[in-house]
Amino acid sequence: MTNLYLETAERADPLPPPEGERKTDVLVIGGGFTGLSTALHLAERGVDVVLLEAYEPGWGASGRNGGQVNPGLKHDPERVERDFGAERGARMLRFAGDAPAFVFALIERLGIACDLRRCGTLRAARHPRHVAGIRVTLEQLQRRDAPVSFLDAAAIARATGTDVYAGAMLDPRGGALNPLSYARGLAAAAVRAGAAVHANSRVLALERTGTAWRARTATAGVTSKQVVLATNGYTDGLWPKLRRSVVPVFGAIAATEPLPAAIASEVLPGGQVVYESGTVTVYYRLDAQNRLIIGGRGPMREIRAATDIPHIVQYARRLWPSLADVAWTHGWSGRLGFTADQYPHVHEPAPGVLVCLGYSGRGVALGCALGGALAERIVAPANEFPLPITAIKPIPFHGYWPISVPAAILVGRVADALGR
Image (cartoon, rainbow, N blue to C red; front, side):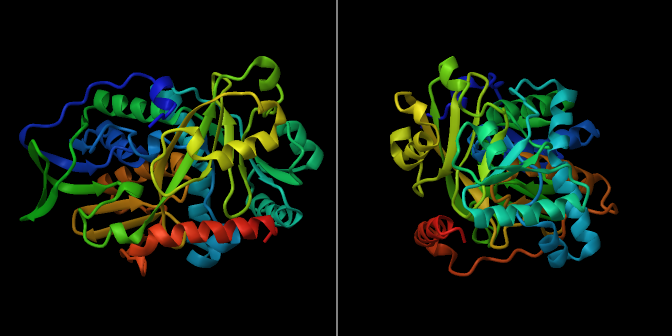
């Protein structure tokens, strides 16, 4: 897999697997943003914590995503408040809206080198009907004091360098980073704070032993009073029914060579990150070396080159004809976790077990912020948690996702073309 970040990210520290038997206060399973943030914030509070990652920190979607740090939840504020009630809905909205600021403050406090840019996010609409939807979202956010603003067709053309958009919402709370560098930086910070972080340590079994839990790997056993499961799109059968509560959807990304200065000045001159409004759309940004990184839905499998997603490359060339002769050097994919209602899900399925997953493409900010909230939940369980803690609900006909997801993508593309 030609993941660009494997070439551009900061060096990973060696994190050997555990050996023998070990006892700890909290065991975290999964080395993505949620697991790493949980381990870091627990260690900083003096809690003895062990993190077990099947491959290496950031191996999954945390180290393969588009690098956009987007604020908010998937749904509009009124929908959130209708689904969860005015008080809890407002609390969820504040938490998700503040999630990028949580990430930025953490990066700055810990000195993590990850090409951070606090550049803002543009939600862009190609179809006038999608502009109407953006205006609804904008108005609802503004009534809740979010610092968002509307860009008309001329303004979004100046910001993006393409004239295909009819309007956009600018949210200055968002930004961009190198996600694999960020994941590795979180791992290193957690270790410095006292956490034991282990790579290449897949948990093969998790069993109750009295009032504690014992996780077994190929080289060790770890017994803990508290377990946090943070495996998201790579959730397996370790906990009953959990895998069937989230649908793994592949996000595919292509990257160009570093753009020549003349072309780079035409692509995203406003410097923001962009994600399109609609059902099946693209998202893109420039990285620190002026490569265009653009992602969207690809095949429901791993890809290894930009030639595996020609529709995304062709779309980029329609947006910016000056890319016609630019080389596409990298293409990769990863599994994102989508829930049926497109909200993050937090579960407490047994005493001493917490689960958090399902960010529906917004995990860079939300996953990390929820890691901090999970740590707070463990050390101060009486405090209010920002999201509801619910029962695990398997998705009906989950086993058909390799068929149903491509079908849903096709329907979504038709709907987007019609502006629905």
